[in-house]
Length: 159
Ligand SMILES: CC(C)(COP(=O)(O)OP(=O)(O)OC[C@H]1O[C@@H](n2cnc3c(N)ncnc32)[C@H](O)[C@@H]1OP(=O)(O)O)[C@@H](O)C(=O)NCCC(=O)NCCS
Image: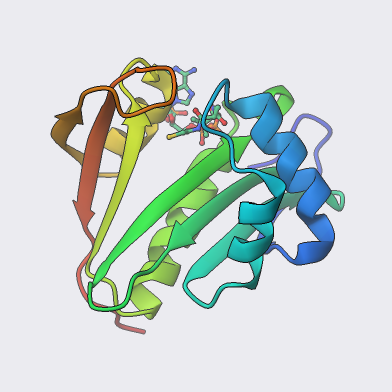
C-alpha cells in the first residue's frame, strides 16, 4: 500500500527526536483528550510503552502507542492517528497489524482499547481486525462523550 505520491510506507519505532511531529499528528487528529508534551516524552522513554510511526519519504504520517502493564497479559492501544491527507489508504491498518505483532512478542494474549462511541472509521477498522465491543463507558472523555471498549484475543507468540 502506498500513499498518493507512490512512496512506500514503513512502520518503525518512533524516537524522542520526532516528538514535535507526533504532537502535530495528535493535535490534528483529536478534538480533546490529547497527549501533552510531558506525557508523550515520558511515554517515549518508558519501557512499558511502544511508540510506532508510519513513515513515507521520511515523513511521519501515522502513529500508534501501545502500553503494557506489569502483571497483565493485556496490551492497550493508547493512541492511533493517521494524517488526514493519507487516511483511507491502509496506514491505520498497517500500524494496528504491527502493534498486534509487538504485543504478541511481549507476551500479551489480549489487546484492548477505548474509542469514542461516534468514531465510525476507527470502530470499522477495529472490527475488521477482529476486535469485539465489550462495554460502553459513559462520560469517558473530557467533553463527557462515551467510549466503546473493544478487545481482541491475540493468542500466543510463535515465530
Ligand atoms: C481511525 C484512523 C486511524 C483510520 O486510519 P486509516 O489509515 O484512515 O485507516 P485504513 O485506511 O487503514 O482503513 C482500514 C479500515 O478501516 C475502516 N475505515 C477507515 N476509514 C473509514 C471511514 N472513513 N469510514 C468507514 N470505515 C473506515 C475500513 O473498514 C477500512 O478497511 P477497507 O479499506 O478495507 O474498507 C484515522 O481515520 C484517524 O487517524 N482518525 C483520527 C484519529 C482517530 O480517530 N484515531 C482513533 C482513536 S481510537
